[in-house]
Image 1 (cartoon, protein in one colour):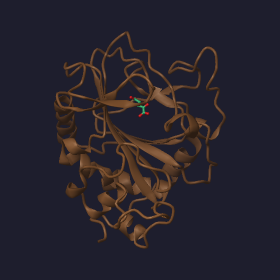
Image 2: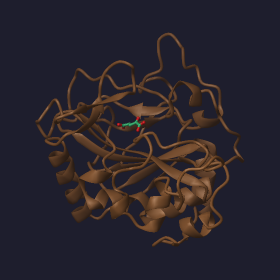
Image 3: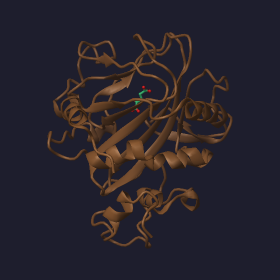
Length: 283
Ligand SMILES: O=C(O)CCC(=O)C(=O)O
């Protein structure tokens, strides 16, 4: 399996993120982009307001304009390409190098950030209120991390750039500062990238979207991975796409090869390392 270069490892450790250029070719970008336009018309999970970060089942996105806002969760069932992306080697190999083999895919998401003066951007860590307060050390495996795939070119600033505070994954951060931390606070870096690029970042890195004044929507896909002792949070027990997955993908979705029993997810099946390191999975 691929591993991080020394330079990527150093950047990951110090900054808490790395950029992988051109993971998708233009045809793949076009395919995923079209898929996002179609998902919008279909039922699925979208933000429900209160409480923050919870999703409710809707018949379709509130805005049916392909350039309008969409935030759809648990996207695997919409197209086989979303399933294949679970363990796409160019990215997944590096996830395993960073996280180790005892991992789950914990959530998938498609976001369209509309170009609008009404959205000011925001900054957060992943994993909710508790995980925000847990920062592992430089030498520790992360508890969770995300792959963000750009489906749109992003350049300049305030064009829906993925925005990070480099190094904030290992430092106390003034989360309750007044005025609040935004994508314009000193220390924020609004990243540029091309459609097809992928950012890998730690759950504890302070990050978020910048406002979008570009005049066009910015589309992304997000895949989150966590340690096995944590849990997937896109579905209650088992994903509904298991029948379309390889053994390795099923393992990543929490199929340990037997019915649930106490001890599961803390101690892994004996074939866990082989299952994760083998592209088509190990039966
Ligand atoms: O839309 C973005 O650029 C950021 C998404 C984000 O903040 C996240 O995935 O947690």
